Image 1 (cartoon, one colour):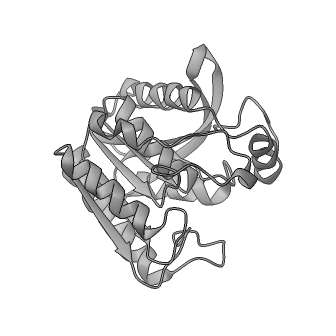
Image 2 (tube, helix red, strand yellow; image 1 turned 180 degrees about the horizontal axis):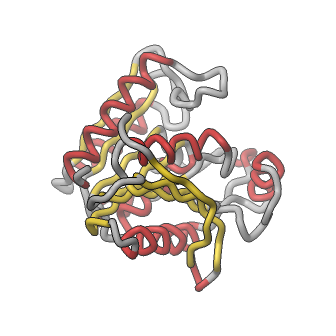
Length: 247
């Protein structure tokens, strides 16, 4: 990490012209920087995701994390907001794409933007990063153990989302995928299937599967955290964005 940064809560214009809350972090130095849209995990717009947003700013990126639960649960604590959204079936895909498009345009509007923007997402956000990269014109994307790209969610989970592997041919940018070998959502078989489809479409991508790690291995606040996998994963993420976004 390097340099000073500044951060604040702001609003961006998302899907349908809705104003939604977002957390912005940026280098407090002069320069021209790439942008990263940080897509939070299913547990919500929480301190852990904001810490990741700060880390990107400390490494020389404009970073914004939109609160995807702003409409259903404005001002509510992450756990309560996540429960409310989950009970409603999750964030609709079309609305998600509109919100990420708004976040991308917000970053590009900043005076210190170099015009390049990538996405990164964790858990449900990993799937949403993949979806965004297949729906918008991005410069890079990272999928951290995004589930339900290949197979639908189990019925008992209550999520009203469908597989999106059929969109792989529209992937607009290089994609980095980071997964745990002990994860079941996505399973190693689903990861391999996604690799196969991307290769058939001639897309630029790199997938890495970490032995001894399961779902949410980046999550420092959860028992699934695996320090070696997380540290190596962070290095890969920053190298990926430096390659395609500049820093």
